[in-house]
Length: 323
View 1 (cartoon, rainbow, N blue to C red):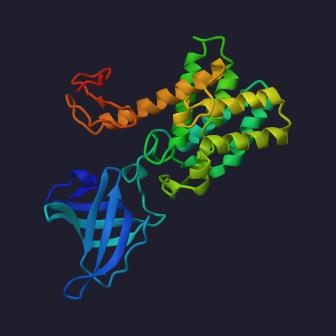
View 2 (tube, rainbow, N blue to C red; view 1 turned 135 degrees about the vertical axis):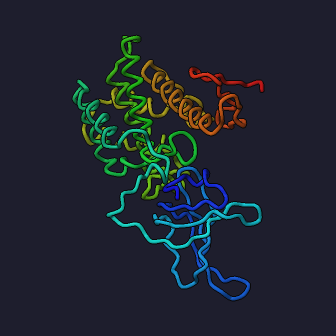
């Protein structure tokens, strides 16, 4: 028996034993009046329908994690798990969450420490206090929160992954562009997406489930500027500094059609936008290319408005707008 294989790797007749996430679960009645469980079970690779033909067993709660013993079969030419038995997971189970949901590559505490250390290194006291206050307001939710519902960094701890990667890129670029205020840029990076915590709802696994009412009506840019303004007033931050940070948040998507009412009007704002765009695109490209074999093209990716090519040799990936 192969333990904890990914669902998409299973073949007909293969046994599975391991942990899966319950996407949906309910008790149903068959045509002959018998009861059975109909479930959708998932891991990081995808979802499968599953059946347990014992009507006396209660359905597990949606969004729970269960340990399953099952056989992969086919029904109407589609793969289906026939469950022999299952149990709810408990705190003693050694569960690798990276097998169940997309996860950031680094531990969340390491990424949060990176943000906190960079904020603490800011020389301007008012700027440092403002960034630290907003991080404190973010609280524990930032540890597992994703950066998006579906696109870039839509993963467990994705918001920290996106922010910490941008910070590392900014640190590398700062010596090349000495005219940049490195502290102001770092502050803008840490602050720019914090209000995604209010823009979306996320489950206990760190996956976004839906946009909130405020997220749909206002969006994280508007909410972020409002929260930043309130924090700056509470701390008595000088107005020019607060306005520059507010502008960086307002303009970090660059164009009105992408949510920004203003375009970047000073170097740190421009660099924030470029780093945000670069990190988002590199993530989306890497994610898309991981789904195909070398020598193949992806389907057209609407967010990038192109197809991508995964080259046969290791190295830089070629993109194509023509194919």
